[in-house]
Length: 516
Image (cartoon, rainbow, N blue to C red; front, side, top):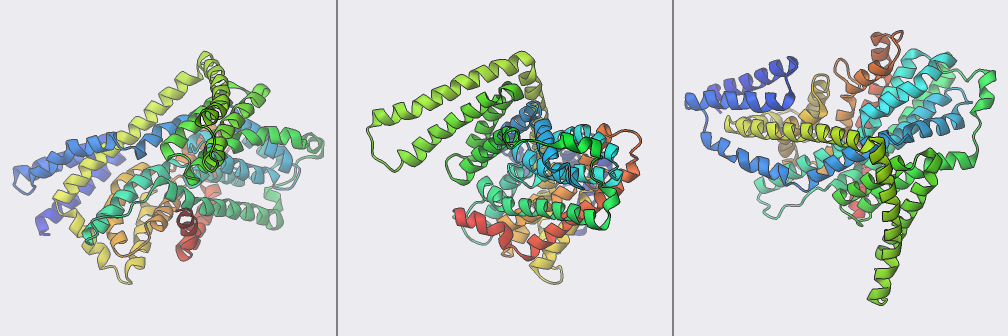
């Protein structure tokens, strides 16, 4: 690559950085700056215009991608569950279970964050809800504002590693394309693929490890810094009691939904898109039947589970008359549909369906517009010889492919301070992933390392989204400085988990390959 193309690449990234820092919408920055530089290159005959002819094909491929169809469904599921009251019920139930102990509210927040991550996966909803519900109680009991802020923000980011996660859905498509590109470059013309199911399975153990590390840190604080997480006052300790029955009523609905969505994906019963639609239907059930009628939602989910059990496990292994099979499966399905229609009517009357639909369209449109802008950037970057430049740069890192991987992860961590995870997935990952995968790095392991890395971007100031959400819900007497200092230990814990998974790849790879 000659010096003039190097100057174009420098100008491309300088223009992107300046425009992004100005606050202009990301999708239009990616596409606009790329097309502007391409136009200048065409004018001076430094760019081949045939690269731009592929833009319509890239847009069509993105709009017809079955994998990305799961994005709006999972967004709808999370937004609807936000309106179902599940978060407040979980916080109340688990808070009462642990609240009498020193540091108990911190434990409860981490556990609730993990459950909400596996059922909603929306950082903003989780952080805001837990800040509004638990922060006043924590401050009243004498918790350190830094610990309270760090615990709530960190628990909210669990939704980016515990499946079903939007990060994993978007990464699955990007890593799969990069993996196929790497194999084709190596002469393998029947390349393997990486599915959402593989990444979901690969993220389960690292996600649980993250929860365990957070809880271990909070337990250690009760011994070494007990003044930061005191037990409740004696006058309020008696109010924290909860019966097993009451706790199960709060826990069963989200657990049933989690097992239904993840179980159907990992068990091969349904595709990720089909499972996302099941999750959206389950979210409507939980929102339609509030806490006072939660048993109806539980009954509906049980009938749906019964239909799947009969169809897949019973009649899939036992020969019975076809009419008997159809009637046996149709009965629980029809009962589920009846419950679902009642719940749908309830959420429609309450206005929850319209607000959820608007939120889904807004976030999904942002994702797909960024994807289109990133596709334009990718073509222009390739036209200026950027692929060869990146390959040359990574290949010449001293220490081989694993040293190159460490450098890439470090750069991504720094980019997380100023860029959104969607931009990193659509812009940075397609550029560097093929080169790393050609060196023999496992694609599932690479994807999980990237997702763990991107999780830190929600906590790193100044643009960590979890910090913004917490700031909007926290009282003015909690300073921004305390929020930043509060999340620092949890950023360190996230990096610790990243390092553990980096040195022990089987943590993220054994389950996906065992399920294949």
